[in-house]
Length: 247
Image (cartoon, rainbow, N blue to C red; front, side, top):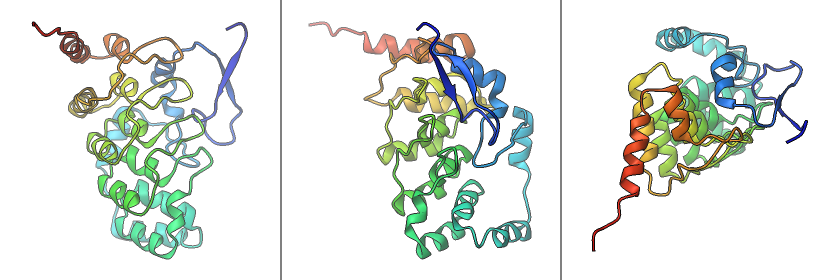
């Protein structure tokens, strides 16, 4: 390894200087300590705790508020479709794609597409509409995150299921070697039920490779054993695949 360093840009807010970390640093621990810096779309300054996130999701805006936002972005279709995907504005998505189908492929400065935004926000109808509109199912951010990574990071189990049904790359690894299973195993969601269900979904997939290691050398099972209550699920899978039929 020597003094070789890697640079993470998607863990920083826009216009901040780059942060450098040793090549073997533990990205999942960084999610716990610096998760508030993860951009959730272009220009994000999201700094809330898990409780703040839950409260924000439960808070509803009026239709007038959404219409005002859409009016403000009407001359910036790229920004509008990204915003609409994150905020579950299905009619707006349909209208934009009818006018310009190529908008489905746009992205922000961190490489997040409308599909990424809909995925981490848990909007399965938006995800379906974007895929039907021609979105690629495995676009990558500048740090190598696919929409499935985003869905599993925030335990969006319905979205993860939809993406897998449309051919999402189950064992895709980020630039730091993290798979969707690593992110689901890190147990960072405030929803314990959705966190468990996301793991169940991934572990039930026939072509899953649970032994893949991150750049810090950990498998998803090892992550689960140190960071959450669901490590027994990995043990059950290991027991199942290790059974030798009696002849």
